[in-house]
Amino acid sequence: MRLEDLQYFQAIAEELNVGRAALRLGLSQPALSKGLARLEAELGFRLFERTPKGVALTRAAEVFQERVRQVHDNLAAAIKEAEAVHLGALGTLRVGVSPLYLDHPFLDAAARLRRQRPAARLAVSLGLNDVLAARLASGEIDVALSAIEPSHQDGLRREALFTDDLRVVVRPGHPLLARPTLTLADLVGREWILPAPTVTARRQVDAAFLEAGLPLPQAAVEVGTSTSQFAGLVHRSDLLALLSDAVKATGIGADLVPLPVPQAVWSRRVGIMTREAGRLPPLALRFVELLQEVVKEQA
Image (cartoon, rainbow, N blue to C red; front, top):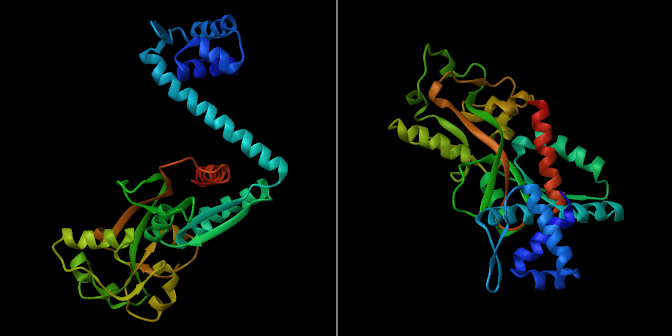
């Protein structure tokens, strides 16, 4: 399939008149019609029906036109990115990342991006998913890596990369560990380190207690960042905290003990957030691809 035939089709589809499309492209009508006939022969179906005023798209052509538009957009983005690489001026990647996933997969993907795009600058913001979602919506960043909630009408697109279980952890020797069995009710009235109520992890914890008909956990220490960064405080107290499997695997809080409470394990999706409106800048698009590669390789 020839690229110029797709260009001919797009021009006719926008003008809905072969003569005007030929004039726009600087071609003769026979040459344009020949290219269209060649494309229809390759596809195996008609793209236009003749009307008294020109032509009209067939139903199949309406669907095909949207795909052709995407091809043209992707080609334009690829040309723009190639030119930027050639000129050594790729601009700035504005990315937000949760502290939980800074070590992996963010730093792995960032290192690859630096090797591939040495002229690029990275402007990195740290925050949990509620903060990053607000920064995306306001246009402060272009892409975010964090825990993601089910999509809702907030103008953001979400794509899951992997799942990460969240557990309640305590210091070794904590009084709760002496009990033969534990339930969610045994955690009522305990002091917690918790993120803000707007954070996905806090929402999941609160929902579990509500579903069990129990009072909500009360934060003795409420933090605006990951509770894993306060592992040292958990060691020095009887506070309960949340720790994800992904963070524990990095060695942070490695000797903290998960409480054996089946209802206190929350599986959550970790992934990429972007704005639904508009296209990602080429540099941000490449970074998303690298994140996907890193996660796939290390799965």
